[in-house]
Image 1 (tube, protein in one colour):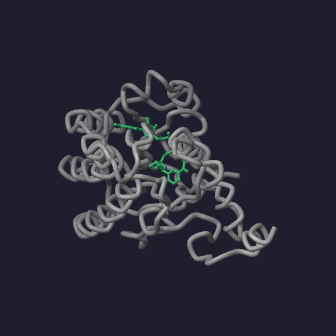
Image 2 (image 1 turned 45 degrees about the horizontal axis):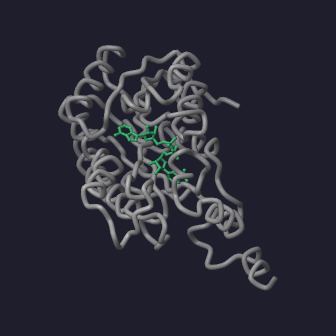
Length: 270
Ligand code: NAI
């Protein structure tokens, strides 16, 4: 059901790879709520993925950008400003990648070049996006930026590898840049800490199936789906959440505040 929550708003969606992607679902929901969007992803991912199909569904242009390239980001914002004839009201940063994780390098035997890349792609990129937007004055007054995080930023999930450090940094940038952008232009910046979700990035984590099943049993409401994450993101892009900023918002069915659930105890007693 649509509520026209984003009527007249314009935004950029980073990170739609295929129809499992959280960004894919969010793009569709934003358009359903009345927004106009620009889609972007890394040039290589655009060749592998199906973003053109999404672009047709959303009637949106696709502008490639590697989030680690300042030139690409400047090009993305200048083309977006041109396309909309002005700034944007929201941005979704739904980008993450760890080659250490993909290669199965243990956390205690990391490859530092790859760790550097993980931090750049998954965390510093939010700073790059916000700094570029601020310099180009590309986000309108009371705009809203959402990035996606995971609870491994606060607690140990041993196989989440260097992505745990990246998510801590992402949440820190959210607070620090969120302060600056609020003061400068009332732009709000938040992270949503999402339940484990079956996507390309999610399934790259070692033991992911065990992990997602445990989270399902540990969460009083069960795991939050990608579609539900898209719904929550729409509320953060809407005018109904104007005073929410610099927060890490758990969207996890209660997982983060549950010590242990009866479902997990029952399992242990079997
Ligand atoms: P996904 O694999 O569909 O999306 C990740 C996206 O990052 C892809 O579209 C990929 O092309 C893009 N990307 C990677 N390197 C890039 C680069 N250099 N430049 C531009 N884009 C680049 O997976 P998913 O799960 O939708 O991931 C979206 C976000 O949600 C990520 O930040 C992820 O860490 C986060 N998240 C995912 C959870 C899960 O269990 N799937 C749980 C909590 C957070």
